[in-house]
Length: 163
Image (cartoon, rainbow, N blue to C red):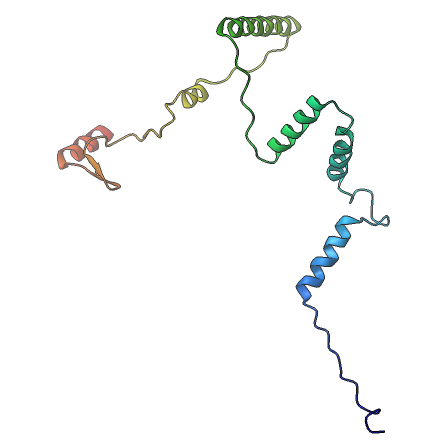
């Protein structure tokens, strides 16, 4: 009789609070409940899902183009442009310039004037790609290990030119 009256061991279940919260958040994101406001549903997410489902109806070429655009949006590099003979490239460039010229003339006739880009922007873009020291002042002396060593007479010339 004593064997049948044995005490049952007490079972304690430990749940890590961080994991419990994470599981709850994942469930909420996967199945948005209908009692939320319409504005709280992520419209972009829904649009992306619809687009992905619609891609299956596209032709293979369009599907590849969509996948490439999606990859670029995530940070991939754009594919290289197709090679083209130089005379054909020049012809296309000429046609493009003519279209731009016609567009400008049409805008001028309608009274639409667009602001031209400033020369400062062009100068910055024309650089050789390397950093250029545009500081005004002491250009002489030696530059070694991040320190410019200048002679006293160069400093005196600089001070005279300042005043």
